[in-house]
Amino acid sequence: MKVIAVAGGTGSVGSSIVDGLVEYGKHKVFALSRSERPTKGAVNYLKVDYSDVDATTKALEGANVNIVICAIAVISPESNQAQKNLIQAAAQSRPTERFVISSFDALHMKEDVEIAPCLVYTRIANGWFLDYYGMPHWKTNLEPWLNVLNMESKWAAIPGDGVSKQALSPLKTCPDS
Image (cartoon, rainbow, N blue to C red):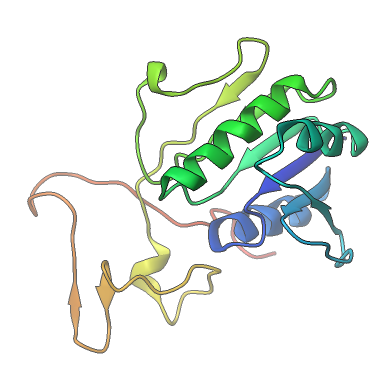
């Protein structure tokens, strides 16, 4: 059994990851949170301050976290710095062996990913989330993104030139049991 912590675990993508890990049932799951939260079902919450690398390291070590999955929406310099600080904390945490970077929405050059050499990292490169095109009929944790699909006005933005192949990935890839 591994101990997995999901940064951004209360957000739309992160909560989907947490739900999937809980459903899988073979790991202890923590959602990292900026505030204190009580345990909810099989999900434990771990309070962290992303601006304090040493305190975050201690929190990861205290929970014996083996794997950190970062699902922080990296959309600003501040959120980018939060992920960099989390990488440093994970690298300093003795039990932490793997870091999954937040790159669900973009490809990054290997040299652009600032990762500690002592930490194994994983990058997930997927296409657009298919969930956006199935709302409101598709069960999802994602919030409607009007830049992609506007059901009320009856239009959709399709990436590419309309001819190029593309990959769409649903957040949940396993069928319900």
